[in-house]
Image 1 (cartoon, helix red, strand yellow):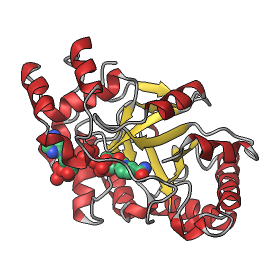
Image 2 (tube, rainbow, N blue to C red; image 1 turned 180 degrees about the vertical axis):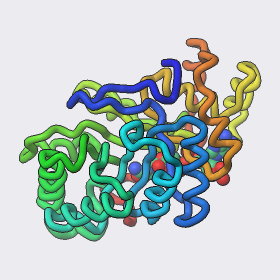
Image 3 (cartoon, protein in one colour; image 1 turned 180 degrees about the horizontal axis):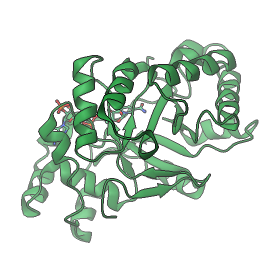
Image 4 (cartoon, rainbow, N blue to C red; image 1 turned 90 degrees about the horizontal axis):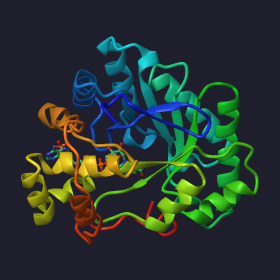
Length: 284
Ligand SMILES: NC(=O)c1ccc[n+]([C@@H]2O[C@H](COP(=O)([O-])OP(=O)(O)OC[C@H]3O[C@@H](n4cnc5c(N)ncnc54)[C@H](OP(=O)(O)O)[C@@H]3O)[C@@H](O)[C@H]2O)c1
């Protein structure tokens, strides 16, 4: 683990850079363009977006303008919660390809398993049909890898009833103080890569005193310690920032190592960043 372009290998053999650049709450237009160009200048080669972030067009434009070659990049997008059906998912994939100005996506995810708008109808059937649309786009070569986000074990069971391709990724919230060990073990046993979203607790980690002490002791920042913790656990963190200096700071993760004792202290932090929404009861 030496740089941002080291890779993990997904269960279908596709390689994915071990750190991704997060773009949630990165407004479309100049802010998204500057953030993505800064990330590319700092050496990130993996960009994480979603239809629901509303910034795919700016990200596509930033990538084009950066001059970084498409085949050195790993681009992920995710399906909107309103598009849980075969036809809508198939159309949404085409729209993401168009908006991002690419002919293939490296990874496409079902963003949430059980959106509120389908909960009272046959949401399981919607989910299975949606997955079939991702499988067909994968088989047609439009997407190099397919996966899910915010899935718990019982959501995977629903896919297993009909799937012909196994998910390659589960993108879930993993941050000191908020991670689900049982779900992590399940994904690892299934050979599903864990992408760690909100690795900085969407900014809430910065007020924790213990994290600040560990950062000071290691002569690093809290963000760097957090991201290093994630990497030393073999997660794939997706830090987000719209500030050039922070984007650069968050890329310097390979010139130090956390001791076993620091890792254990961080593992044991509780309730410091709030808790992720339950996908079966969330209000969206
Ligand atoms: N699949 C899902 O359902 C899902 C859900 C949430 C997130 N995600 C993905 O995961 C990515 C990251 O999660 P996130 O957006 O929740 O947030 P995050 O990366 O955990 O934290 C971002 C926050 O921390 C601040 N920050 C970043 N680097 C910093 C630094 N070095 N020093 C001080 N503050 C810093 C940012 O502020 P500034 O931007 O102002 O610098 C922002 O407020 C998302 O962008 C998205 O790509 C996926």
